[in-house]
Image 1 (tube, rainbow over the protein chains, first blue to last red):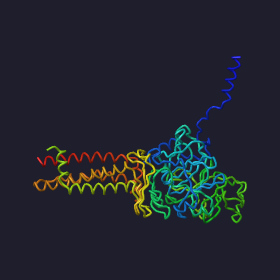
Image 2: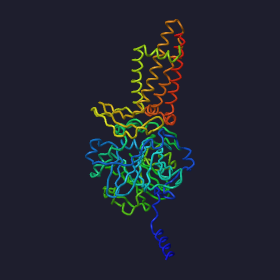
Image 3: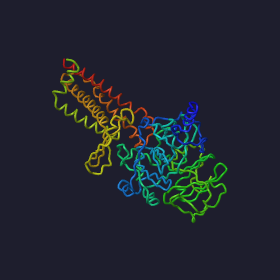
Image 4: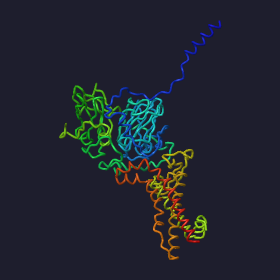
Length: 347
Length: 183
């Protein structure tokens, strides 16, 4: 009887699920993006940005308010980072992000991090599992080096690959976010909610310490100088000219915003295959598709809606993440990048 | 006369000197807060104050730079108020003001007695000016578009304690000079 009782206890113990392990940030191993320099070279290139770890505090309990309430704070030409995920739209004003750089958010039960680096003009979204991302206070190629609060691994935002810590060499899962204006975002997503300035921290959200995007001034001027050393340089564009960049295992490519606006659809050959970049005139951004068969994209049949672009020959093509960046930073991370500046300069 | 007593007498029995030190402390303190970013534009024209984050009073943003606890709007100005940063600003302002006022007094005493005033007394304000400038140097360099801002970023916070030490040393030097002039 006693033996049966012990067996029962053992079985019961085996059936009770162990307390859940602390979930790490979900990763892609090996990463699906090019890593142009060695991890050691990236580590050597890391610089202090001034503030300490979490000295720029991420927003970990974000609050949102309606578009009408956000109108009191935002001008239609103010920059926002937009996210549409699982049927829900959210806008993260640049004037709040510039003080926090990371928002650890959750949409419909999906934990995500919205990240923004003012020094490189880049906004990227990442799945974060149950982990939170924070600001390390360090930079590489002027770009925000994030850390995850589970393993303390360090992730340059634009690279999306850990360069130090237990997860070194692994990539983050990216989510498409949109760098656009408040007016454009509202026009596409009228039901959007916007990040509230009630962040739990006291900041002057009416002032940007680096300059302004509306109108453009200070650090954000295309011709102005970068502040920190970079791993590769190029004079082909002004340092802070905005490019739309994307990268795949095959390599990296960037198109200038004027070229994208002019041509509406750009076909690029990269790493032995083809990609189509489609201009979204409302959001003034681009959508990138892997188009290995060079299927024709019919501009007049393209439809732009909540999910982005559809129709016009994009059916069946797989989307590739893309984001806007200052040229000097894109070149520093992806020195072998293809650069497309317009039909006359087609490579 | 001991240097400390000479310093005390110079300031306590000289209302004009006290006024000058106070004015410099306020002026320099305001400038320091402006340049470090605690004080800035963007006010909506109203007068209002909220203090929603007292629990962050000891949280640092970088060495010697603390989280604000309140937001004070006065006309066009917005002050993200940190008591600790404000104490640093006024403390540095007081040290700078005392240095400059004492240097001026020493020069006057020297002239009255027919001595050759030391030019170094006028350099006594340099450390504080350096500190105030250093705190904001990266911002100024950003405005000017100079890449040097990045190189300064990591050492900037440490210029504050360095400047405090230099100011205290300078004050001690001035107090000793005043004591010897009085004896």
